[in-house]
Length: 355
Image (tube, rainbow, N blue to C red; front, side):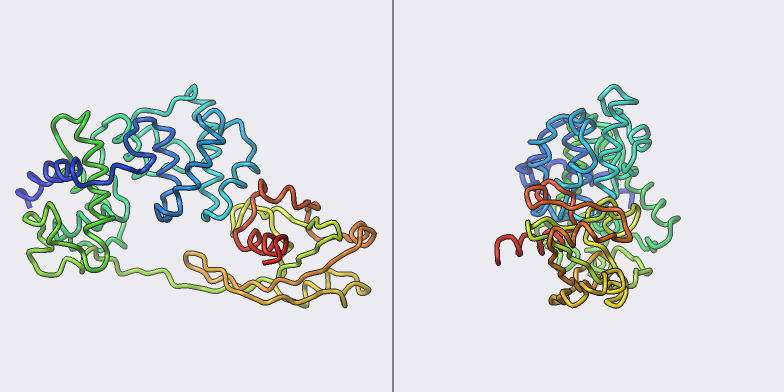
């Protein structure tokens, strides 16, 4: 174990210089705003998905003060489709706190960064390491996989105590010299290893720069690390959606309560069953309700079974309706900038384009 710790960081730094990822738009910068934005977007989300969102956010909000001054609706509108919408709400709150409490400058230590909304220990360490060369360890999913394999860490990461033990090991394996350059390269390198070489299945051990140090490889079964026994069970939830649309194309949308699924986004009124939906529609209009094809929208740990029902209304009937929730009529010109759940946006776009 001691020899593994001694040579690990130097090998990772050397490898990252020549073989690591260096062409992503949030790399090769020490701007904490850009690094923070990328770290939040990359939580539970693939790089390929994040790229376009990252570019659009920076075009609209080039500085943290621009993001802080924006409305939450505008932020959620740009985020729409990226998922995990609590990230967007925290992103907005964090930008406001950076401006209000820190004069528009991100704190320079991981400890202080963690006081901001939506920034946990690993994200704080990434920002502090990349931007300020602080000697702190990150521990995202890729890094956990690399370190548990290299050290043959047997602890069950379902246990908080074992995760804390791995964090201590991660800290001990950090570079100790020339931190100005080595910390950003090491942090990027260990992430790159997990993303491109030390993958969950069929790791490319023969290409790994730390293969000679890896106890998991030496034991012949690196894939059995990390150990994590507790798994979240998938569940399912069924919603019936009332798609009320006027003859001019405007639709009735209500803002979802936060926290919760699609919290803070605008959505069709949600009902538990078709009968509940019909009970909310005046009897003389119920015959106009059309059941559309149901579909499943997959969330991280839940299957959301959605059954949209379309009700086309004249301007007179629309004025007469009184929905149970607070909402408003939104014209097609407003949809692009509105924070909409991905399946709702898809339904509206398909209806508008006829696809």
